[in-house]
Image (cartoon, rainbow, N blue to C red; front, side, top):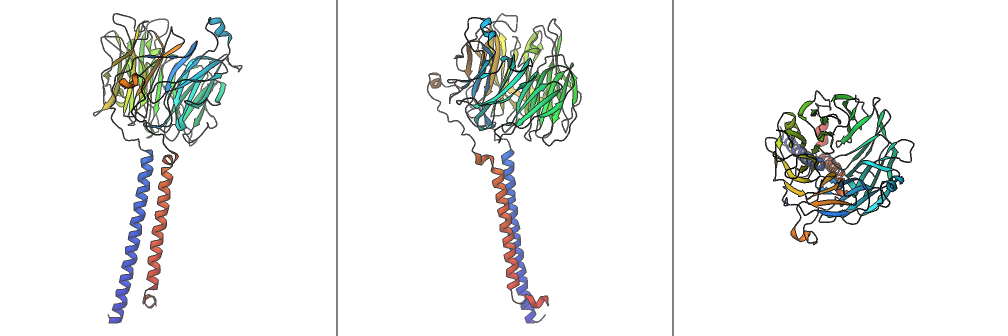
Length: 552
C-alpha cells in the first residue's frame, strides 16, 4: 500500500472509528434513557415500599359521636387514597339516619326520605362535625363507603319506598370529607348493589335490575362514572353481590342466585367472558372476591344454615387459574351453626394487602366454640390457618381492613365472661393487627379489647394510609342516637385533646400521577439526541478528505 493510500486509509479508519464511537455513545445514551423511562414507568405501577407498623397497638378509650335520632345504617369508615400509603384527603365516618323526631316508630315510618351523613376525621383520626344530604327513600340497612382519588368518598345506600315505582333502589353519591356531599351519581331501581375499588382509587358500582347486572366504573383520574355495561344473568332473586377490580379496571362480579354462586369477569377491553358457576350456596351468604393484576381471581363464601333450624354451615374458597378461570371450590370450614353467625355481616373477610398478598379470615368452630381463623389465601386453600381469637371464648369475625404496612386489622366480637350466647347483649369488641410472615404464615400481635358496647348492630373499620392508625366505629342495637368509636395508636397527649405530633403523608400531586408521561418524554428526548449524534458523525465523515476518492 502506498503512503498516500495508507494516509487516506488511516484517515478513513479514524473517521469510521469516530463515527462508530459516536454511534455507540448515542446508542448507549438512548438505552440509558429508555432504561430510566422503563424504571420510572414500572415504579409508577409498583406497590409502595412497605414500612413496618411502629405505632402502639393500644386503643383509645371508646368515645361517642352524636348523630341525632334513628340511625338506620352504618357506620362505615373510609380513607381516600391512591395507593396503600398515599392519602388523597381526610377520612370519614359515614352513616345513614331517618330524619325527624324521636317520638316513635310511626313518625319515622311516615317520612319517605333518609339522610346520609359524613363526619371527617382530623389529624388524630377523631371525627369532627358532620355534613348531611337527603336521599329519596328509606335506607333499608345496607350502606357502603369507599375512599378513592381526589380526596373523595363514594357512598352507596340501598333504599326502599323510593320515588321509583320499584320497591327497591340504590343511590350513589360522592363528596370529600369536610365538604358538602356532591350530586347523586347513580339513582335508580335496583334489587341489590355492590361497590369495589382498585389499587389507585378506581371505583366500580354494580346494580341488579331484572335479569341483568349493570356495572359502572370511575377511573382514578376521572370525575364521574362511565356508562353502564350490562351482564346478563338468569331469572331469580340475587341475595348477595360483590364487585372487585384490578388495575386495568377489569371487574370481577360474584353473586348468589338460585342456590348457587356465580362469577363473571367483565373486561375493560370489551372481550366477552362466560359466566361461571362456582358451587352451591343457600340464600344470603357472606360473599367476598378479589382479582389480581396477574389475571387470577379468588371467591370465598359461606353456605349458611337455614334460618329456622340449626344445621351445618360451610365456608368455601375458589382460586382461579390463569384468565380468571375457576375450578372446583375447596371446603374451608364445616360446623354446626346454632347462632347463624355465617349470615352475619363481616363474619367472612378477604382483603388485598399493600404487599399484593391476599388475606382470608373467617369464622369457624373449635370444640363447640366459635373461633376466628386466618391465613394468606393460598395457604388457606391448602388447609393451613392461624387461630386469631381465644379458643376458650366464643368469637365471631365482624370486620377486616388492610393497612399501609403490609398488615390487616381484624375485629371480632366475644360475649362477656360467663355468657353462653356468642351474640349476647354484653358483647365485647376485640382487635388484632395481623401480618403475613415468611413461609406464607399469618402472625398477629396480642389482641386487645377495644370496647364492651353491648349487642352490636353494625361495625366499620379502616386504617389511615397516612399514619397507619386504625379507626373502628360501631352502633349498638339499643343506642340509636350515637355511634361509638376508638382509635389505635393514640398518644396520651392526643387523648387529652392535643393535636397529633406526627405528620400525615401529603396527598399525591398531579405530577406524581403523570410520571409515566415524563418517562416517555425523556425517552423521546434521548432518541432525538442519539439521532443527532449519528447525523453529526455521518456529516463529519463526509467532510473528511479522501472520502470521495475511495468511493470512486
